Structure formats: C-alpha cells, structure tokens
Length: 292
Image (cartoon, rainbow, N blue to C red; front, side, top):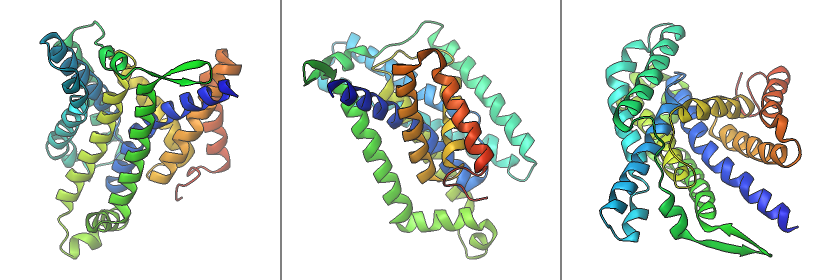
C-alpha cells in the first residue's frame, strides 16, 4: 500500500508539470489556431531563469525565504518573452498557410535553444537548495520529498485557476468567443489582437511555470525544451488539441501510464505512451475531448 501511494504521488507530480506545458499549448492553439513548436523552449526559459535567479541569490547569501519567492521568476520571464514574440514575429503569419507557422515557430525553437547556450553555457544549472530546504514527509516507513507535494498542489491550483479564469470571468467569455468565431468577435468590437497577445502570454506563462517548479528537483539542461514539447504533444493528442479539459485528462493518463511503465516495464516506458497516443488517433482522431 505504501508503495502504491508513493507511485501515485510520483504520477501526480509528473502529471502536474505536464498539464502546465500541454495546457498552455492547448490554450494557444484553441484561441489562435497556431501550433507553437517553440513552446518547449519557453518551458526551458522558465527553468533556466529560475535556476539562475535562485543560484545567484543563494551565492549572495540571501535568506532562505527569498529563494522560494524567486521560484516564479522563470514564469514571468517566459511570459515576457511570449508577449514580445507574438506581435513581432508570429502575428504576420496568422493569415498564411500552416506550414509557414510551423517553420517560424521551429526556427524560434532553434534560436531560443542557442540563446540559452550563449547566455548560460553548456553546463546544467541547479536550484537544488530549494528542494533540500523543503525537507520531507513520512509516508509509512518511507520519506517523501515535501517539495514534490508542493508541485502537485501548484499543478492542481493552476488547473482550477485557469478553469475559473476561462469559464467564470468576462475576459474568459471574450476569449472563448474569439476562439469560436474571430470575425464575429471583431465585428462586435472585440480587440482581437489584444486577446491574442494575452492568450499567448498566458500560455507562455504556464509553460514557464512548469519549468520553474520542476528545476529544483532536476537541473536545467540544454535540450530539455524539446523533450517537454514531445511529451506535451503526446498529452494533447490523447486529450484533444485546443481543449483544456483534454490537456488535464491527457496529463493524468500520461503521468500514470509513465509511472506504471517505470515500475513494471522500464525498458518500454516511452513506447507505451506513444502506443496509447497512436491508438487514440486511430479510434478518435480529434482526441478524447477534442472537436472534429
């Protein structure tokens, strides 16, 4: 029983981070109909900025409480980058065929990866001190990192906050109206360009938050954005691209399948995820919650 609880918590931990990445990707696609291949790089920006900020503050002798307050720094940085990219590089491509959008976002992926290498070099950055300061809790006869529980809580609270923001606020109504019929929203006086930049910024904020909260438990390394992007695509393929409910359900499915695979069949852990995604595509091409 104790082992099952720990495996379940590990699955929720992984699902929480995956939802932040895939949820932002789905939000951007659902509103703007653009498939952002650079989304994983924004996750990496969140990880690098948070790791660097906490490392610099720790080296300067900052109090421990400040290190925890610096965790969202990466999310803010990713949101700022997203707010700058949307009106300057992405907006001119909205009226062009999708292959142009894929090419420009893939180019951004490469550029951001090289910028991370240029700024912070090839060596990993770590914010492990925060992980250690959080301590651990007792589960039966085992100890479990308390920081992992905090990540799970952040993931759940983020999902609830995003749902309330989209479905219970005036801005959410305008956002959903724009996603369903952009021309009608424009005719009714909605500033579609402002809605687009706000939606893109929120999606980037989610990706950056995913990177920011994961980096105390693992180092920020080059290439982490590409790996996150691939897994985010698995999530949205299962749940349905453009659906926040699908991103949530897909993240849970992938998280629990991955943890089960690690426990029982570690050699084919990733193969199981891709197999499930392929089956969903065959049975329901739009995903579990997607609209054809």
